[in-house]
Amino acid sequence: MSKNIYKIPIYIAHDHMNRYEDFIQDIGGGVKAKILHLTLDGWIDAPNKSSYLNTYDTYEGFYERYISALNDLDEILKKNLDKFKLVRTYSDLSNALVQGKFSIILGNEGGKIVGINAENLEELFSRGLRHMQLNWSMKNRLSASQGEENTLSDSGISNIGEELIEKMNNLGIIVDVSHSSPKTITRVLDISTKPIINSHSGSRFIANKQQNLWDHQIKDLSDNEGILAVHFCSRLVLGENDKQSKIEDVITQIKYVKNIAGIDMIALGPDWILGNEERDSKYTYNTDQKNITWTKSLENSSCIRNIIDPLLKSGFKEREIESILYLNLDRFFKAVLPRE
Image (cartoon, rainbow, N blue to C red; front, top):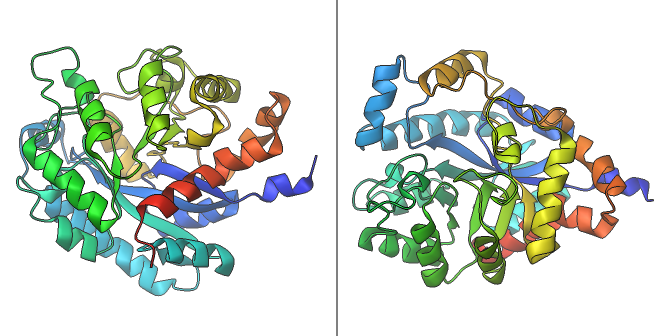
């Protein structure tokens, strides 16, 4: 076994940790790049539950909260040009890796930031947006979410949504179908001219949660040359609430996806959202998730390398581990982001 395996660059497809100290922690853990989901289609850190619940049925405030968070991020980046890089092109990403800088691919968990007619997309693109997830926990003007599965409300993707996909493809913005309904995912796979991503998910055969994918969906995503990034949240790994997952459970998810569709579609999508004491208490209270946990020994980016030894012991070859940690997402970014 080569000792260099512990020095493999790590790219992650989904987390929410957006402070300076979070980025420093990422670097210490060996993470070289991540898609940063800066906000989501719900005001999770609203001052009270009533204000949070009101955001389910409105578009008010989403664009403004995103711009505010982006302005805060810009201030961090301006003060740390030697450490961090906002990725606008694939060349930015590859150059940052050579230069030893930490890369941030600017994204969002939900499409409400673009407004009711997608009028904000190009403005956000000019500010650096390179990823957008269509849905979070609720339907929006673009598409139906996982909550509409097997109901008459699962209308798939709307005409506005289809237009948005075309614009995202043309601009070089990553299309993410995590949390989207089955009809939405199927239609996006039909119409997208670029590979797409499911940034934090897993096998629904193992863990029957709506966010996870059935075998045929995994195969369809692989045929698209897309990415399934495996979640670290316990309930998504196990399919059970209020139970703690272990690294071996994440490995089980990875093995299953590999057996269904091969190693080349697998990445890591931890979805870390805890670690900011002020925000965490509001998030867990507003969303009724006080018992939410992440996989033991994979609770944050400082310990992400803990997954390497269990992968080796489970029979994964070094090249396969490199694919999971880095190469698959690098190939994906090269295919989707603007080149230069």
